[in-house]
Amino acid sequence: MDLLKNYQKKLFPYAYNILGSAEDARDVVQDVMLKYLTAQDRAIENETGYLIKSVVNQSINLKKRNKKTVSDSMWLPEPVEMTDTNIIREEILSYSMLVLLENLGPRERAVFILKEAFDYSHQEIAEALSFTVENSRKLLSRAKTLLKDTAQPRKSATAFPEGYLQNYMDTIRSGHVENLVEMLSEDIVVRTDGGGKIKIVSALTAGADNAADLMLYVYKTYQHLFEIEYRELNHQPAILFYNNGVLVNCQIFEIEQTKIKRIYSIVDPGKLNIIAHF
Image (tube, rainbow, N blue to C red; front, side, top):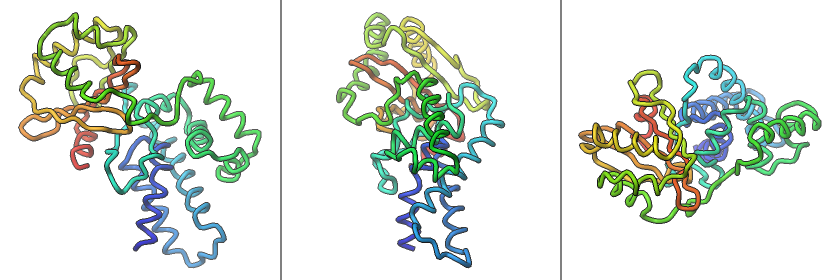
């Protein structure tokens, strides 16, 4: 049982960073471990390497299948709680990074993650994914081009000022649109994922003025009745909104130089149910 628990903790970041879904990642890890533990012949020299390779490849295959079924362009990843003792915190990518990685194909994504987040050599990547070193280099180059070399594998949990979101909510409550605009980056983008199940005000909102108007409208129409909880999800600050104890909205923030640059708003009931059970 200790072997299973230790490996689940070790393998989860590989699956999660590729899939962007904690639930799918746990399923992949559990399936790989079950097959390994019940195999007749387990005479494997490098047990850890074998299991990582199995998890990475199964995650790539699942991501390929999911890409074909997910039609909503505003799909957002499932976040994870950073205080969860069952995950290795420093191996979990930031939420903004996971969103950016959705621009990559599954193999490009896997190569980028193994190289940039787990410090694999191109030789190790080639062995894990069963292709050549040259293929690994090309896929990494393509991934960086698509990401425009702006993405960082992780973000520190101390990258945002303490109490910043409390001030943000106080500004929204005050209704002063000019003060709210001052807290937002000029090129802010607000993305909302309703999972195709919930009617949303706007799937994509860009620009400080538009974002401020949206936030004030949503607060006055809905959120003024909700309870609020401040959390840290995937190394980034988040606000959880509850209606009579039921989680109805999760907003994750990217803050750059004291300005809010991105807001990722999740109202998909399926994802909210997972977040609520952290």
